[in-house]
Length: 396
Image (cartoon, rainbow, N blue to C red):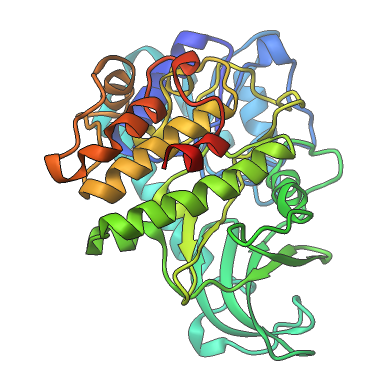
């Protein structure tokens, strides 16, 4: 998370990060325009907080000290004047950078060191048990943990067995439940992810079984998808017939999502899983947004998602609608057919530029029958794309 009152500086830090981590999820906050963050703000859901000293009517070092004192607050990198360095490090900054002399390599190295340290701590935490300790976790009643599938500093994903039925499920566990006053923390996003998809019954959307809340954690129990993700399948090679089949299924799922007023906003092969019967299921709606609701903390000018799969309007921080997901679907279709991404660049911004300016790539001759559909999916301007993913089936 980036907190600073100057838009240019927030953009600069965003560029540094996405140049090195193209799939980073970044939220930015302007305390001048949005007001100062509440004292209860816990920073939950963020691996690192980049805090600038331009905070409007609030002293940057004072904010740094307040945040650093909160139990469980993420590591803070502080950007200020050279004269502030000593005090910043004293009151809790994990690292200090002179605001007008931020060097890319130094920043990336510092952030990498912090992330490594956080992952190490998460893997030894009492909640995020290792495989050798799998069993009935007293904090997650009703489930026996089989093995850990993945983990971050604030959440973990387990393969588990429901004790009452012995069915295998996936448990996504959030480590910390922040205070009620923290309306912008990870807990809210965690609940939103559940609420967005829990009521949808569609064969190509992951099934949510239940939500549990404890004193210091929350969890979502969802369907176990044992066929791996689409990213792995693409790497192994996909036949034209399977690519078309997967496209139909993904489009059908997206149509259902859009029908209930939800944008996915982070459609990519890693968020598309397969079952053992080769059917597809969309997962991970952490960036999803209800079309009719305003963003809680970020405005329409914020960039979310993964650059390789972003629509031109999303990559440039412009307003988006369901046609942005249509574009992402087109990128995935091209990649399934060819094994290659349609646009590449030396940096995140370079990829975003390609999406906006480079022509739609031509498919190899044996696949040319899909070019017309691909052109409509990957049109630069939303008005020139398919009006909805429901039209994909007609074109196929």
